[in-house]
Each structure stands twice: as C-alpha cells, then as structure tokens.
Image 1 (cartoon, rainbow, N blue to C red):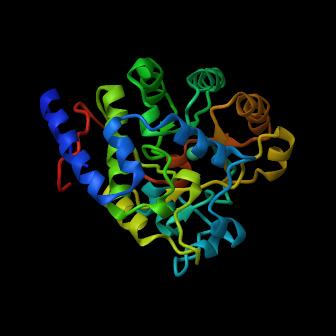
Image 2 (tube, rainbow, N blue to C red; image 1 turned 180 degrees about the vertical axis):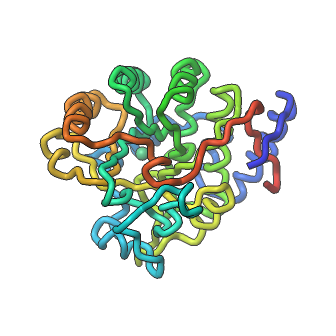
Length: 309
Ligand SMILES: [Zn+2]
C-alpha cells in the first residue's frame, strides 16, 4: 500500500465519491460504509450469529481436513520450519490461502481476539498480557476503531502485540462482490491509521466468521483477488476456540491459533489459559510471527485510499 497524505476536505470528498460507487457495486454492507456506522441491529445480528456458541470456521474448512480446505493448494509443511531469514522463504509461503494453525514442530501458539466491541475487555486482557510479557493479536473491525479509544490502540500498536484486520463491518464475504471486499480491506486500514495517527501496515487478516470459501470448500475467487490486491496473501483462521479453559487446554497443540472475543467470559478463560500455556512451555507469539507473514510497515502518514489503488 502506498502512503498518501490528504487534507480533511479531500478525504471527505473522496469518501463521498467512493460512497456513491459503493452503493452501485455492493449490497447492504456498502450503505453502512457511507454512514460510517452499521445499523446497531445488524451488528447485533452478526455478533449473535458469530458468537452463538464458539465461533467456528467456515463449514467446509471445519469439516474437511485443513489441508483439503483449499483445493489444489500445496500441502502445509509439517516438518522443519526454519526462520524466514535463513531460507528467504516464509513458512506461510508453503501454506494454502486459509491458514488454521502454525508449524506443528515448534512449541509456539498465538492468542487472538476478534471484533473488539467491548473496549474494557480489550484493556483488561491487554494489561494482563503486558504484565506477563506475552503478546496477543487483536483483530478489530474497522468500525470499532474509535478515536476515543486512540490511547488504547496506540498502546497496543506500540507494544509486543499485533493488530490485524477483521474487515470493516463483519460482513460475510460469501455474500459480497470483489469490490465490496476491497472496500472493507482498504477502509479498515484507513480506520486503524486514523486512530493511530500514523501508518501501521497490517499483515494479518481474518475474514468475518472465518468464511472465505464457496460451497465446495474452494477459496472465493473474489476474496483471493481482493486480498492479494491489498497485500494479504493469506487469511488467518484458528484451531482452538473453546471458552472453557479446560476444554481449550485439551485442544491446544504446537502451532495453535486460539480464537477469542472481547467478552467477559473469554477474558476469564484467557486469564486461566495464558498462564497455563506459559507454564507448559509454550511460547506465545503474534500471528505474523507464528505464520511468518512479514513485518508491520510503519510510516508517518496515515494511509488514505486513492481511487485505482
Ligand atoms: Zn468476528
């Protein structure tokens, strides 16, 4: 992504310009972008759908063996996974488009938290992890990145934690056009940079509901094309999502990606689970480090999407 500096008035006109385009190119999700805030009931509906029980990946990806979820993709490496600097290749390069876990030969795991509706929960678990010196990866929705929470997001961005994209409004990609997905991707980057006041180039992306495939389990061509356009070569899924700490312990293995949400019960679980992971000798790392997705590009100027980029 290129950095662009724009004055406020131009941003407004640009937003208006795209808003018009959105209305023509996509369905209801685009209307929400023009307003800046999704309808409360829609968010509630999506959140309820996602958190009705533990969030589970797209059905095809869940029922199939992970390696089979991406038809035709190379089989993930389950053997040696040397560091990228040693080989010039990143571990993720050998993986399918949707990655459910990291290397199984290293005792590393990544704890992630999606959506980020409840800032008090984010603050609580962030402080908890900082006291323990371990990182987490947060996947906020773009429309949940509020200016009033700038201090919190700046602290997270400046810490050992990672911020990834969960798109702007939690809209199911299976119901979206290529242009619609593109808008969600660049808009979320804009939202994060607006809050931080500088450019923080996200490298990890988690699709809403973990859905990124068609009914045959093949990655949506629209999603792959849009993600590639905005620098995301993979989408990040998960292999552990139990909010009962004892059940989660049974599911965790080397390379696990743990999925949680900013809810009291999830925070409670993590306060038991994270110390246990440390005690068991797991190294907690960010998603980008677990999967070797690349480094966060930092720049002085917030990203502003330019038509055609
Ligand atoms: Zn979500």
